[in-house]
Length: 308
Image (cartoon, rainbow, N blue to C red):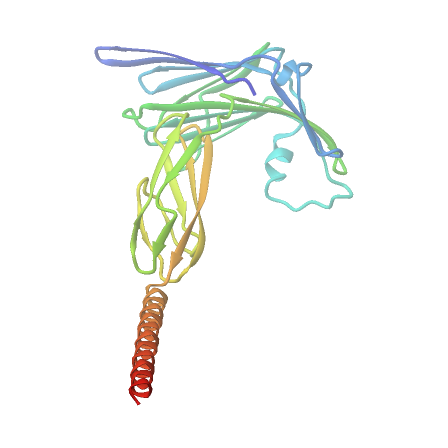
C-alpha cells in the first residue's frame, strides 16, 4: 500500500485542552481478497470502504472522531453476525456473511477505545469494558462518533481505522478492506557475535528503523527463553546452533523482525581437544627422540666395526 501522511495540529489554551489531529489516507488502495482463489489485489472501485481521512477533535474530555470515505457510508448487514463470527465455529455448509463494517480505534496514554459500526448500529468498548458513545451517525461520506474520555489526564497516542465490505457464501466470495494509516514494515537489525561458549554471557542489541516509538521488543533465543529488553544478555546452557529472532512492533501496530544464527560450543570439548593435541605433540617428541637414540646407537656400532 501507499504510505499515509500524518498531519498533526495541537493547540492548548489556559483552563481547557483542545486538540485536532488528522490522518489522511491515499485513495484507490482498497485490498480485494478472493476467498476461492486465495488472491489479493488492489482495486479502486470500492469507494464505500476507501478511507480518505480520519479526524480526531478533543475539547476537555469530550472527543469527536470522524471517519471519511471516498464514496458514501453504506448500511448493510447485521452487527450481531459480525461480532458472532469471531466467537463461533460455524458449519461451512451454511456459513454466510454479508455486511459493510466501519471500525475506529483510539489509543491514549492510559486507555484503548474501539468503535464498530454496521448498518446504523454501533458497538463501543474501552480498556475496562463496554461503553455507549454520546452519539454515532453516518451522513454521506462521514461516520461521526462522539464520546467522553474516561480520564481527563489522558493524552493522545494513536488513531486508526479499518473498513470492510464482505459477501461470503459457503466460503465463496470476496472481501474489500482498507486500513488507515497503512501498515509499515519496520526494518529490524540484530547485532551480536556469531559464536559463543556454553555458560558464557552473550550480549545482544536490537535496532529499528521506521514506525513510531514507543517500540515493543520480543527476543526468542531458540532455547525456550525470551526477553522484552532492547539490548538483553543471554547464557546458553548447551552447545549447538541457535536461530535468534527479534520481533519489534510500534504504537501503531506496525511490525518487523530479524533473525540470525549463533553457534555455541562446549568448553569441556575444547579442553579435551586441547589435551588431545598436547598429547599428540608429546608423542611426536618421544618418537623423534627415539629415532635420534637409534641413530646415535647405529653410528656407535658402525664406528666400532671400522676400528676393528
